[in-house]
Image (cartoon, rainbow, N blue to C red):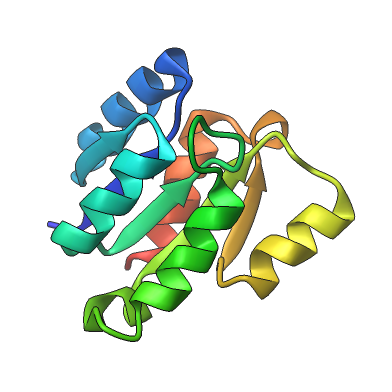
Length: 125
């Protein structure tokens, strides 16, 4: 079973994605802020990170930087697939996310939760 870490602070979205991803057969853990998310990433191995950018304490950009730094010592982080799921949809932000290591940048307003799950299923085949 593929393991996904969702770092998202919106309780409504957490509930939806938690339910949808579990229904699709994924094991999912949730962190509602950047600090907790980084702690989870350094303690457990995940196949995919679904990351919001606007978060309390540590934002998604800082998480991407820290993952890059941590991957020097934590081998499995080198293979972590990162999908950004954010409302920030400017061209510069999308390019920055990809440049910082995300394999996909999904803009929340452009995807239904079911479409996001389909994207994740394709990545984790």
